[in-house]
Image (cartoon, rainbow, N blue to C red; front, side, top):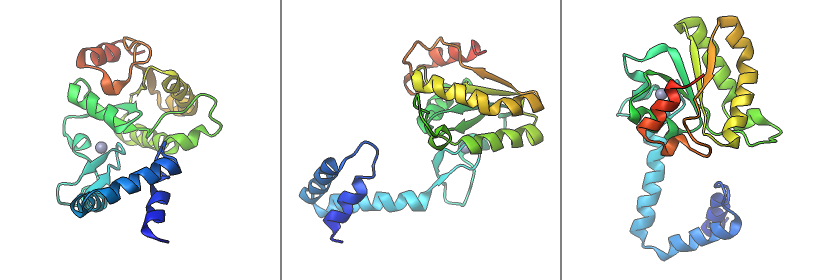
Length: 206
Ligand SMILES: [Zn+2]
């Protein structure tokens, strides 16, 4: 396959990108100089060489030279093992972490479940979350799981699904499962919330 068709095919796999847009990307790249394309391919190569997924929270992080499997957030010594916050995306974790108001651990679902989705388990890391909670309950005395979803219909739908699949674990290990209080007004996303809003939402969780 020639490189133009190959790239069109690859870009078409990106979320929300159709073949027409993919073609525009390729012709854009051809219009740029070789230096730009080299920078891009270099950055792509570094994604594989330098970035790992944390085996604890599933966040993508840049390794600091070694072969570490756990990200810098999960490696912090003073984190409370009894507390776990579940968020939708990497950026949600980063914003919550930056606010400095949560000292438990995190779990990133990798997305949310659209309303009426037929295969909800495939949209998020449902199985991974189940086993992470089971493991933390058995070995780390997990007491509370906070579902920190965005305040929109997908977030609510995701929380309902998670409550359903986690119920047996909550019962067996006496874990309370809470949701952020709606100090977050409807439509609010964690990613864009300021520290005070996050703090209110966290302290009014139930
Ligand atoms: Zn981590």
